[in-house]
Length: 194
Image 1: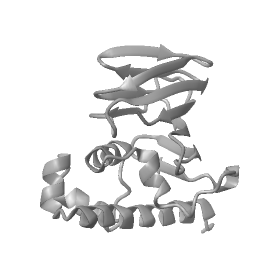
Image 2 (image 1 turned 180 degrees about the vertical axis):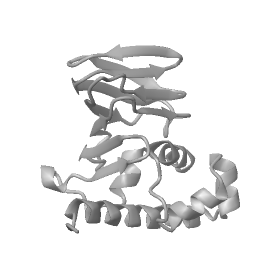
Image 3 (image 1 turned 60 degrees about the vertical axis):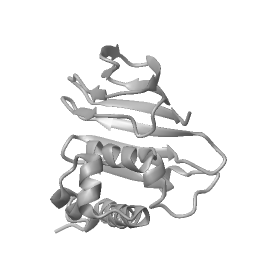
Image 4 (image 1 turned 90 degrees about the vertical axis):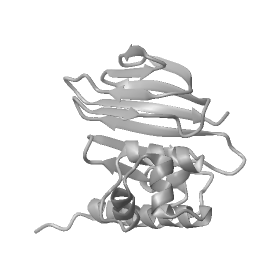
């Protein structure tokens, strides 16, 4: 059987993410029960995510980020090494939500003193990700489609984006990202803290 270095790197990120999630809960002084109440995520799922028995989905991470008052990029940056000013392609953290077909590359992760970040997103045809709330109310997002088509729903309005299109908005409520196909979509998400 061939050894896959990319899978090892993904497993390491998942293990560090699990440890950080457990650490955040402890820092807030919450039991699993209290976090479950605040996030709407079952205690068993939270426990399994904190022990790296499951790789959390994008929706689950988004709910936890909302409870902890951070963006997903900020949370993921906390499991990386010390951030550098120059972020080489080979050093950019890639996280995959295998269940939904979402791959997320932190191109320009959060950095102290900077309010913005860049994320590359890839969704497989038919992939559909719903976020029930923004991690930070009023979060500014710029979504630029590089290849393919992307449907984004925000404030109950559906926006159909094609290659080259850019959607700019502040996020106050639920959002949904869907790849209508027939091909995968690749896009840049610029996030700016309010």
